[in-house]
Every structure is written in structure tokens, then in C-alpha cells.
Length: 400
Image (cartoon, rainbow, N blue to C red; front, side):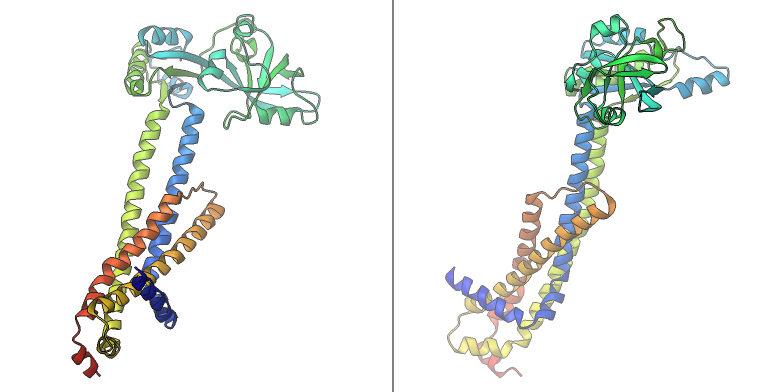
């Protein structure tokens, strides 16, 4: 090992003397390693972003969205039009599918919101307590909407974090009054940070401000969130939900099912295919770089034939000669690997800054890319080193 270490030091000195040739030799390794790191970082960043999105939606949830546009289109053509997604639909689904443990109906509208310092159209969601439960929402201040609020049609609301800051920039929103379509509501809570939900206002689903009538009225639901007991049961539950709704709506596909778990699996398959293709391409780049190193090393053996003869004449064994050339190949590819890692990190940072994409660099990817560059040196440096060790010392000394 000590002898091999000395050969590594000697190889470094030899390669530094020919900087440009050494750099050109390992360009394939440099770009290959950099590409592996950059592609892995983009893939991992996309995966983490998808996981955050799925986590926000809830991996065990099924979203059923009412398609009002479809009903309008069918109505204009004189076809059958259902009453839309209803509480009765959800009741049948809950009774028919025991694997569904919670149901959260939602009414969404854009209403006119007003305070002393703020007035604008704003998204408003009519919800039950189950909504916060299935999405794991927590409050920073106050409380969430309760069953008593829903049953008593109380005029209370919960604000998303960004909405609370926007509507009440100079005071705490808790306990403040806010007018929604002319009706007064009291702020009883402010949500913690929930990406995708920070800009909404939440009121009891039974509130008359959500209906077109002044009397309590059950308009079609905009959305229903169904929570499934276990992740493996989600595909079967989603199929049952679809069949129940089609049967109840007499075949009218005026709803859309969104299954976060299925979306995640599809994204994962697409991402894995993309990563496999990119790794294959960069792997080819590394192999081509390795072939280039082999060619240069073979030329180097031919160029230094007299040097090999002198060393053999001075007592160096075949193993010494092989170790010398193998050490040079390893030092060359290791240096290329280090430069490639630095370039890959810089490339990842540049891509993230220029495109806004989320990136994540796993330490294992850096280690694997660098290790692969060293392995390339061993594999493609072995044959030239073996040829150098086989040279006859007398013929090598006579070589011109």
C-alpha cells in the first residue's frame, strides 16, 4: 500500500507537468460526473416537491370536485343534468364504503370581503370541522370552526395566515369583525402556515352567504374530501366512489376524482423513467471518457517506452510498472471526478437560480458519481498498465 501511495504521488507530479493534456483527457469524466449530480439533484428536488404537494393534499385522501361547466354544457344540449355533488351523495358513499373514515364537504365561492381598511373579492370556503381534520390543519391563534358553528349557522370565520396579514396588517385578526357580501362575521381563528390554503377565508358551510337565497339552502357542493383508512385501499375505494356517483347521477360524468396517491405514483414512474434515461446518457458519457483515457494512456505507454526500459533495467518489476501507470489513470480520473463534483454543484445552483426549480443534492449521489469516476480509471487504466508491464526491458531500451 505504501508503494502504491508513492506511485500516486509520482503520478500526480507527472500529470501536473502536462496540465492541458490531462484536462482534455478527463473532459468526458468531468461532464459525466457533473451531469449525474445535476440530474439527480433536479430529480430529487422534484420528488421532494411532489411529496410536499401530496402531503398538503393528504396521501390518504380522495378529492371529488363538482364540474359545474359539464352540467352547463349538457344542459345547453338538452341532456340530463344532475343536481351536482350533494350531501346525499356523500351519505351514500360513507354508508357503502366502510374504508372511508371521514368525509369533508366544501363550498367554494369568491365573495366580496370588506373591513375598515380592506375591500376586495376573495376566495371563501364553507367547511365543516372534518375539513381541518382530513387536511391536518392547525391554528396559530384562536380556534377552528366547530360543529356548533355549522349547526347554529353562526357568523364566524377562520382566516388563512396570509389573509390575516393582508386584511389586518396593523393588528391581530383574532376577534376582529369582517364583512362578507354585506354580512358581518367574527374572526375566531387564524391558521398556521398551510401552503395552498394560506389565502382563503373559512366559514361554516351552512352559512347563507354561500347560497343565492336568503333562506338556509343546500347548494351543490364544490368539493368533497374523502379520507381512506389505509393507503393500499385507496384505488379500490376510488373506483367504488366513481361507480356510486355515476349511478346516482344517471351516468353523467359531472364530477372529477383526484387521487393524490395515484398522482404521486404516476409522477414517481415518470421521474424514475426520466432519471434512468438521463443516468444512461451520462453513463455513456463516462464510458466514452474512459475510452479516451485508455487511448491517451496507451499513447503514453508508447511515448515512454525508453523510460520503462530504463526503470526495468534499474530493477523495477513488472508489477512496479503496472502500478505506476494504473496510479496515473486513477489520479487522472479522481481529479476529473473532483472537478466534475464541483461543476455539478455549481450547475445545480445555477439551474435552481435561473429556473426557480427545487433541487436537492443527496450526498450519496455525489459519493457514487465520484466513486464511479475512480472505477472508470481502474477499469480503463488496467489494460494500458498491463501492456506497460509486459514490455521487454531490452526492446524498450532500444526503442527510438
